[in-house]
Amino acid sequence: MHVSIAATATGPSGGVLGRIERTAWRVPLPTRRFFQVVAAIAAVALALSGLGAGWVAARNARTIDAAREEGLELATAVTEFRTRLVAADATAAETLIAGGFEDAERRAAYDRDVLAASQALTEAALVATEADAEHVSRMAADLVEYAGLVETSRANSRLGYPLGSAYLGEARDLADESMLPRADMVRREGERRIAQATNSVGGPVTVLAVVLLVVALAVVVGCSILLAGRTRRLVQPAVLVATLLAAGALAVVVNGIRLQTRELREAAGGDIEAYVLANDVAAMLSDLRVTEISAVASRGSGGPLYEEFAERAAELRDELAAAPGDAAQVDRVRAAIDAYTTAVVEEVQATDEAGDNREAANLVLSQSEQGPGSQDAYEAAVALAQENVDRASEVLVDRFDAAADANVEPAVPVVLGGLSGLLAAAGVLARGRRYR
Image 1 (cartoon, one colour):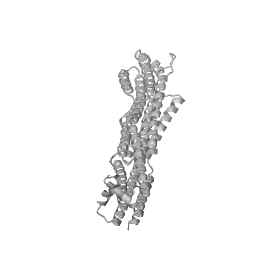
Image 2: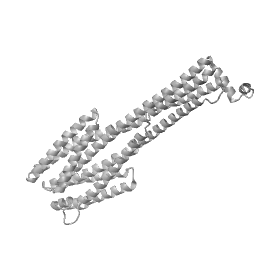
Image 3: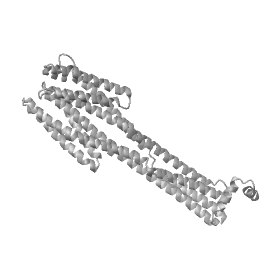
Image 4: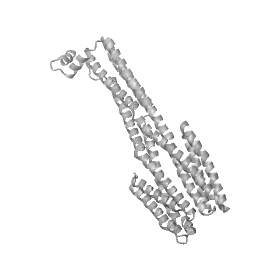
């Protein structure tokens, strides 16, 4: 039998085993040392690749967690703060044209919005980095001052003092010049961190881990070939199992990275864009409401504010024209906003410019005998806009959940690498004992 195998290996046919044997014997090492070196190379390559892949998996998990907290959760919190602040501003402006008096429902709505804005800042502070903390702290202090100015405006308006409008204007300036710009700045930083996480998970370090796994697999295959050449056996069971384990580790890690990168790219691309746009639309809609109310509160001299309303309404339509996502939902929001802006132009502004400021105020508050005013149209539009915000937020959360779930447990490639290395080394050395 031995002669038969040798003839096959070295015969003129130049079979596979013969070529492998000639290659293996070109390695300038004595047989015993050959087996030791092959075992060491296979074990080290597999173990190192497993450690590298495990480190990258742990790093990716930390990156995704940080992007979720310091990116998504931070952006969501400050966006919620911005939305609630603008909504509270709109309700406060309604009180101005009502002479400082407001029904229990409006007062409760204002209080809910201010409380929600404060809670959003608390949530932002919990996930803010040191660089964000100063902005969040400043917004919190400004919110307290804003609420105080609004209360002072209410008190003056109830007493019939003209200072009510001035105090409300000061509160709005504080919101427009300090709180809202800071909220936008922090939100953009959160969005940047989401994009940075995407680049990191699919970046050079991750690619290096995959390369190590590929190289380790190639090394163990090469060692198997050299071993087959020296022992004249194509299959070494332990080494074959080690090769399969190395291939499995490569497949698991590559698939996990692929899924993570895909989910994070979707989050950093269209999903975050849809979320930002949905929040911008809700905030711009509240801004429109404040502008409308301020125009009526000007008592016959609100022409420039009505012009500003028209300009902002046009900007809002342009935003919606390029909106990604569910086209049917976007059309519903657009139709509701059109109904609101039409009500303002055709009812409120026309009535005010005709000299009936009291009736214009009634239309704004939906207390007119003529029927529903702009308040109802506004509430319908803002409800749909908020529904869009909630839906976009859920999509982003789902993306991060999917990215986190796709991550490979760091222990998996480490264990697979160590086990395959031990098997490869044991298989090579066990086979080498016969050649001492």
